[in-house]
Length: 284
Ligand code: SF4
Ligand code: SF4
Ligand SMILES: [Zn+2]
Ligand SMILES: [Zn+2]
Picture 1 (tube, rainbow, N blue to C red):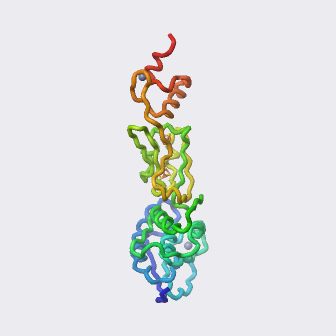
Picture 2 (cartoon, rainbow, N blue to C red):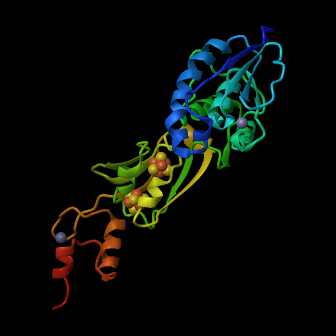
Picture 3 (cartoon, helix red, strand yellow):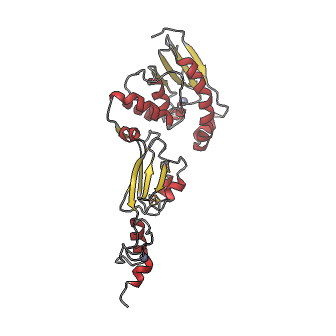
């Protein structure tokens, strides 16, 4: 690799260190840090051997020859995608945390990245460095795992969600689709039926869908499933379109019919009939 000069880059984010410990401040300021770091990294990446991300409170150390030091207000700003984006460009990464609470979250992030790519591999080009999650992690994982056909891990540091939906409980009501802030969930209504779909590359694992589901049908964990990422959109629940066998009117999805009957205390009502025909079919 190129043995260039050791360089140091200091990233200022314009907010007080005290505010860093508030989650809302993170959410608010992370984009401004990303806006500063992304273009600088694009400039710096070509020809460097490695990058050290250093907390500004960490003790100063002499930079390694051919390495760049990027100093941040706290390493808690780093996500797995930052590290993986560097590793996927053949650039080694080291972290210099301060050792205090300020940088504590980065240990989990570092372990997750190491589990995905133990060594740098040049599988992405230098120009389009993306540090916004979950895109940063998805792009790097897909590129880095070409030689590693299976990868499935559950890890709280992952910026992605692994979603499971019970087809026994889900009524295809669509409440989770409306609530999802990332448009990761979709409800497709076609001539054939209704289907609840999920885009694993867009899901941040925020769990808002879990809190809104009236049937407690959803389970979300944080993690990475390469097979799902490669497959793209995933069908979670499907119900075929059916018509009332007497009057021919369109019926709601089967799980919803079951649930409505249950809520009405009428679990034995025939599922192949609409409510009106079911009432009429009752013995007087
Ligand atoms: S966990 Fe969040 S991002 Fe993922 S599907 Fe649910 S609401 Fe959407
Ligand atoms: S998972 Fe829950 S909220 Fe989403 S469609 Fe199914 S029942 Fe409705
Ligand atoms: Zn620190
Ligand atoms: Zn009918």
